[in-house]
Image (cartoon, rainbow, N blue to C red; front, top):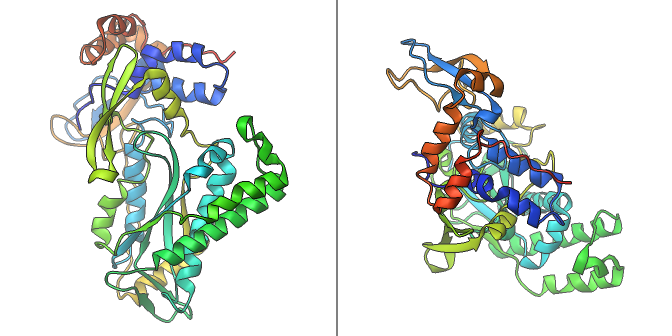
Length: 427
């Protein structure tokens, strides 16, 4: 895929310092760290490496290193490909189902102040809902296994916490003697999933409040009182919670392509950015209420970056988790049994590629012969400057000429001698 004309990193390099000055009252060092990582990503500031083709010996020019931050729009492709390759041998020869559990908008402000607690609870409540309903004899009567991915954004970058669950359309019988298939057009009853999910989540929320795990700030400070919190929870039972389930769809090969749409995504991809002018950003979004039509939205750069930073995850938070017979402690024994009962053999582990680049062996091939590129030398930022003092400036200049930004802002971006080396201070 070609380089997009505008990237989140470009916005940060051009407007990041001013954004920090105007928003010091709520920005933390974690916000600054992410902005700085994205601004430096694949620039001379992080150093680079030289690659050589293992087949024909062709040497490429210096490639800049990636920041590897999980919130960076440019650093997720390789991680996604590696994760999907690892999952390939775990996909069962059966149709799959996609289920989405969404938190009500009423809970979004509380989630913003208690990300780790509420996102953990969202994982746990959705997983227990699927496991319990599937195990009930009236429904599937089987033990299921699945993985869950957390997304916290809407197409307009607002806070919209939800989890995507992808699972085989069936499961192990309770006595582990046969595989139980779900219906051709039906997996589990949506109305039951909604009620059970709502009950489990609210019960977990009450327990978190009693244990003192929740914090309340600003307008939500009165919720720290038990009676006020209990009254605030009651309206959650007056509406159905959103649980969406697709009918069972294609088998393992289709699932591999399907997974790429949901795993290792960030709040917005660079290819959705359209225009940046007069401190305003225009991006493309998909309107699900009107047949997924593509529309344009324009925000001030401060509002765009504020919305982008809403979706930073807590340090060390795991956003892809496995449950049921795919849980880490059960996978080694339960998964081979599933393959056996389905009359199929599990694929052997894929051989590790001897590899090449900073990101992924499968993403970078020789432009001359198509062979694998191998790293032969790693360079620090200082070594790159000594070898080619104008290399970074010229590369940035050529990129900036493609940017859809006003002339004065473009000059400001090029005037930085080393791209991505903005010094952000949180003090």
